[in-house]
Image (cartoon, rainbow, N blue to C red):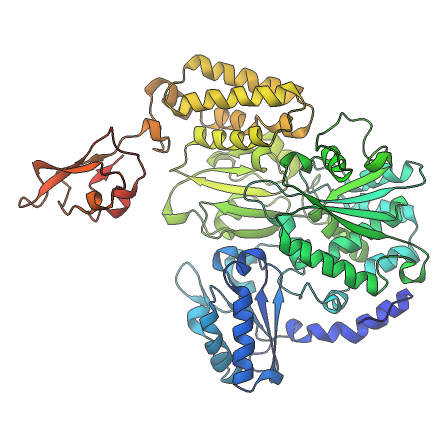
Length: 633
């Protein structure tokens, strides 16, 4: 694969030569003389021993003498993180979940040699039936993968597999068949909007950058994914890095730029590694660098590390960070398309936005625009987390409802608990309630509901979550991450946090609620950048949807969810207490003592909790064997 490609024809010839690499993955057969085993190699599964699974599979294949009958390799994230590590076997498409290194022997001996599925490793649905194939699992049925099309399908460290999925053909098409305006018009016609959160028209952004006349222009990939619970961009870079590189080169051609920068947080070592491998391989093949495919177009890509500042997700702050300056936003206009990196016209898009571009160019804007809603085209990737059965990465058409994502794809609320809210858009978003579950998700609908799309974080909350405490959690994050440049964000958010801390400690007043709303509106309307402008969203949305909880905290001095420790007390009911002493023996501070009161078993005495010593950790409740529990809070 080291021979440089000097024309589009050579790229297409290489595609014909390597497309059979994926033959086993594209065909379906229950019996085979040759197998391909794909092991999830995303960060989540890697932390759960995926590399050891690969090693053990290779060891057992060698020991059993079937090395020539099976190929074993890593893949990107399959998305079904709740059931990882995942191992998928082709051509029978068997989908194994929660695999451990110790399962490798059974997979090789039973599945590969004897052609018998390892039943215990299959996914079990709600009625405990085993499901063999990925596409038959409810988690995947309503998904439509475009940005994630190759994640979990190809080995991201082998460029031949990218080529086999038509990789870089979109770039070749642009360079040989389309003018700069043709490319931009196709992106405009697709209706693609920025997936980083703002939702601005991607094609229009490119058009502005092309219109700026200068001797130097830049293309930037914003991979500074800082939302709590978000891992969409990381997974794309780990599973399909070439889709982003190709898209950046396409944009470079369209706007007249010859250099790209990928700004990625240093906390993503696996994504960084795979990007480096991808850039090196693409450059060696002549798909990046000078005179790409013999067309005279030059495009080089560099990697720049971020130190994890959330504010650097804002494009002007990100640009300043790349320049070596403090990561602070600046007033716009001028926009980066006119004056960006080092004062030159610059186009900035996030990872997921880039991942859609090759598909739009190859398959056409019309096909892409047929997916989604009138004003929000295509699909959106969400990191589904929180109190949900199926934690993971999902990609659905715009217009899919929250109910479909949470219940059909996400499998409902953990432990049979009652749904309470869903936070979309991370710290910049808001909390949506049960009445919003049938809202079709798109940019405008979420804003109308007091939330936002954001980059795609979606955290599900249940009846045990206190909405005042949730607002405080997100505000703590925002206060910590504020760059401090403007007073409203630096001081205003701190004052809001102080009020929320008062309320959760039972010291708040109704006057504090009025102050909270007044501050929130002022900060939203007057902050310099989107971080400050959107910081009050969790407060405003929880006040709108759960005002009764705020009232309970400030008037009744109670936390209805039992989450705010200062407003909660634990009590043992003697009539239910078994007198077993398990709670006392497990209490970390010795706050539980025996009483003279008879327990449920009259031969034993009940216990009580000393409120002044109790740290409200809840361990006593978890250890209590009584049914119903003898300890209440």
